[in-house]
Image 1 (tube, rainbow, N blue to C red):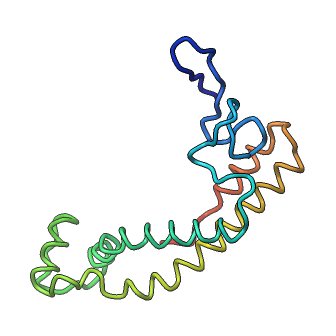
Image 2 (cartoon, rainbow, N blue to C red):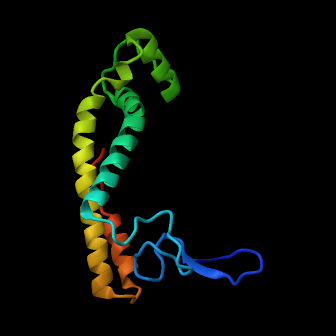
Length: 157
């Protein structure tokens, strides 16, 4: 899918919605400027691993309290005093009765697992994306293959 963009008085420039430019997955768009969504094509594996680890740790850290509440709400035999009607209400009740830090209990273990897992995921994904772009080389199938690779089920529950 393409978008047409450009400034007033300039010729419209075709850009890919998925962040890829026409150069097959590089970090530059048709005008030669860097895409803000992509790392440069010269980025090393360690750069991709660092970006993946940071993204995974941040995402899981932000969502950890919500996941803790969700787990409590889904449990078959919750605490008899627990009458949760909403996620926000449950979070308030847990913090009021069990302490402010209770929803974050165990976040350190999650960080230790999420960092390396997401680092490997990003490194493998970027490596496969680059390999598939080289194999299919501008035939349109590389975006389909990348989408299928990205659409594989996640192990999170």
